[in-house]
Length: 545
Image (cartoon, rainbow, N blue to C red; front, side):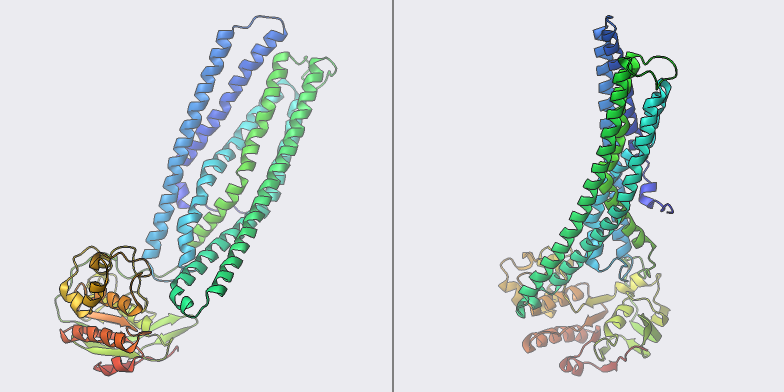
C-alpha cells in the first residue's frame, strides 16, 4: 500500500517530531531505573549490603528526569498540535473565501464540520498516536538487544510475540480505517442536513413538516451512532488482541527466569548461568517491551479518526476550483460614469453552458432580467459581480475586462441584494453597516423607519442568524438597506419581491425606484410583472446550450 504524502501543515511543524523524541527519551529513562532496582534486589538476594541512599537517590533522580521529559513532551506536542489545527483551519477558511465553487466534500455543513469538530480529531492523533508510534519503533528494539545480550531465550520469546501484535493490529486497523471513513462521511452529511433544514425552517413550520424533519434527524443520528459504535468495537478488539499476546509473552519470560534462577532450567543463555541481576532486570523490562505497543493500540482509534480527517483535508486541497476574481480587499471607487458591457458571455453549467445575449448598460439604466427558473438569471448577476467565472466571452467595465486587476474597484461600486436574506448574530445596525454608522437616507430609501419604531431597541436590536424579530418583508428591506448603505453606482437585486405579499412587495419596489430616481443603475432578476413594468428594458435570458 503506497505511503500517502503528509499534509503540508504536519510537515511544516517541527514540534511534532521534537515532542515525540522527548516522549521516547522519557520512556528510555526506565531502563536506568530498572537497572537500579535489579541491582538492589540482586544484592539483597546474594546477602550483600545495599547503599540505600545511593539507590533511592539515583532512582528518584531518574524519576524526576522522566517526569520532566514527559511534561516537556506534552507541552511541546500540545503547542504543535494547536499550530497544525489552526493552520489547516485557516487554510480551509481562506480557501473557501477565495472561491465561490462548491466543495468536493459536500455542502457548507460538511465544510464547516471539517473546519470545526472534525479537525479536533487530529489532536489525540498528534498527541498520542504519533509519539506512541516512535516509541514502538525504538524502545522494543533496545529492550530486545538487552535481552539478547543476557540470553537468547527471552529474546526469542520477545521476537515471536512482538511481531504478531502489529500483524493483528494491521488486520484490525484496515477495518478501523474503513469504519472511521464512513463515520466522518456521516458527520459531514448530518451537518449538511442540519444546515439545509435550518435554512428552510420557516417554510417547514408553515407547511407543518416538523414530524418528517424530526424523523429525518432521528434516522441520520441513529446511523451516525451505529457508525461510531462500529469504530469503538474495532478499537476494543485491537486492545484485546494485544493484551492477550502481551500477557502470554510476559508469563513465559517469568516462568523461564524463575526456573533458571532455581537451577531447574540450564538453557537459554550464552553458556553462563543467569545471574539474579540479569533475571530481575529482564523481568522488569519484559512488560516495558509491550508497553509502547499497548500505547499504540490504545491510540489506534485516534489514528483511524485522524487519518480519515487528513484524507478529507487532502481531498479538499487537491480539488481544483476557480479562484474568486480579485483579492476581496477594499479598493478606491472609480468616479467615471458607469458603463458595463457583456459580449459573448457563456457560463459552465454541468455538461452544458448558459449562453447570454450581448448587453450594454450605462449609468441610470433600469434593466429587468427575466426568464424561466433555472435559465441563469442569478448566475448572470454573479458574473456581473465577478463571483462567477466566465467560460467564454467578456464582462467589460468602462471598456476594461473584469479581472483580478479591476474586480476589487468594481465591487466597491456595487450593491448586492440576494434573494435569501442572511444575517450575523449582531445588532440590526451592524447587519446594515458592518461597523459603519447607518446613513439616515439608507433607512428612508429602504423604508426601514417604521420597522425600527416597532423594534424594542431600534438599530441596537440583536438579530439572530435567521433574522429573529423580523418578518420576511422586513428582512428583505434590511437586505435592501445593506445594499444601499455604501451609496453604490449599480445595484444588483436577485428576485427582490419573491415570496412577499402585495403591500410589502410594493414597499420594496418603491425603495428600488428611489435608488434609480437618484441616478443609480438598477439590474434586477425577477418574475414580478409589477417590477418589470417599472424598468426601462426587459432582457430575456434563455436556457442551457
